[in-house]
Image (cartoon, rainbow, N blue to C red):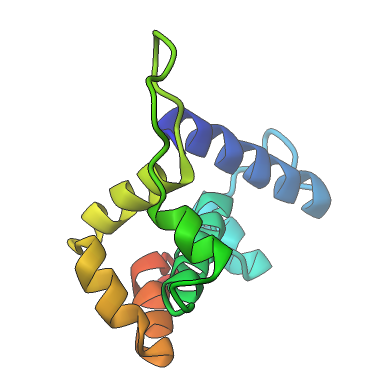
Length: 129
């Protein structure tokens, strides 16, 4: 997810939460307070969390399973001219780099389900509780 998409998604989410709570313009409430009040987190964080949890699930699958094979598949041929399409794999690669983790380290860590889940939860946590 590119930066502008992430910002737009979070802006829509906070705007919706404010509408639901009846918070209108002259009133101000920080996003952190809004998330605390609604016991939620930025929508982009929720999506990142789900994506990384799914990655752990797929990495634990047997090599013969279709999702596992699809994750490792590289299509032949060339892409169209212009900006390259953002793929799920490229997004995950970027997030693994942010986590300071290689694909091989992710494969090893994902084998232990509880360790992977706790690692994802700590990396995706934005709440200050």
